[in-house]
Length: 247
Ligand code: 13P
Image 1 (cartoon, rainbow, N blue to C red):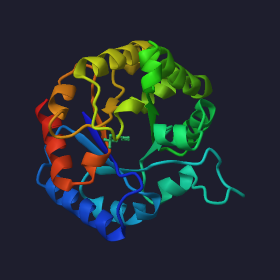
Image 2: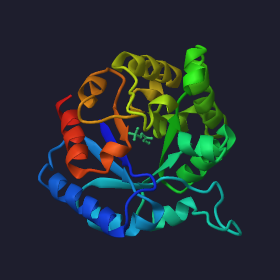
Image 3: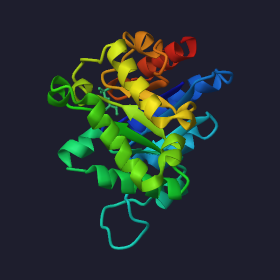
């Protein structure tokens, strides 16, 4: 199991440091935990969070990465810069970036490749809109998003990353996919990845909280969660980690 917290554009330096400190203290008491934990703070908070989590075996990642290695790309951050400040992971193709910043499958694929080239583990976010689900296109959309990356880096490298299935209609809405809906999509992804995908983490994201996590984590192909709002409160995030430990 892998439990990841996407902090999105929330908080302040002080709040990020506090949250990290709280998670670090709790994790240090649970050295034997079989659950991996990652957090994705805003980029400007990465160094302090890395510093606070250094001893706690919690991975730190960025929420986005440039597809380019360096040069005249004002405002962008390269994968090697993120690795340099202590990141080991990065989100790629989050639906908020796809929808609001018009990020395409091809851009996500380029970012994924750049992340892996610098030794970061990319977390590829995929998922359908409500209209796409209602039209019966869920698996086609999800497969298209993953295939675009596979075309760029090969299926073996897709299997080395993490996939987060986040139905757009479930993000920040309080509506989660039912455990069966999640399992169906996850099983389809697993099948598409083939043998090499048996060890690939396939996370579910979209309004996961301490109330609904247990039923989601009980599904065979749900290997953890990518948590938004509920990751901003240490107690709730820690409770979700505990549910993953018990799953
Ligand atoms: P919420 O858990 O707030 O729905 O956000 C999910 C998400 O987008 C994580 O990346």
